[in-house]
Length: 250
Image (cartoon, rainbow, N blue to C red; front, side, top):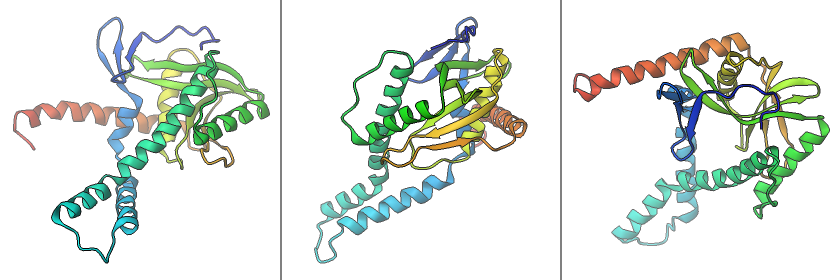
């Protein structure tokens, strides 16, 4: 959807690999989420350990004598417990996100069978009605040719009369990455000629709970500076890779 008539970014996306290529120069553009990955996510280590622990507590029979093969299988299942849980959550979130994408593109799909995905969708529809939303852009590729990166904006809309850059989340919690993610999108969108009044993240609950709407409270200028610093750090990482490849550093 592009109801603003903004000239599309000169970017081609490969949806299988989620990579961006400039259609004129042929240069690869770094994705916004790839740039954010420079920060790392310390909380993932603790969550992974917690899921390993929970699996062992639920499945280890202390009264049983395990064979070596059974021990290895139990430990393997515990080690990969976080991956299975993450994939299940991503599946529900992806279903809801795809439904919303089709809805905004005015090619609606049938309501999914997944109750968790359905809960997220119903929360989204409730938000649309209560806040008098006028959708302007959806699944719109934005790019900064100055900084050579690109990303796909979930949505841009008038919400309660204000032009709002929106990112949807179906995760169980929000983290500060969204401050920088939306700043990256805004830098690119402004370069393309459109200036939002505000940034917003909408968490769509899969458990039937209350919709979480967060107007980004952090300083936009600071967020932009930090995002561009991460962009430079990512460039530096790519630059130093040649020295690793040549065995100069490890």
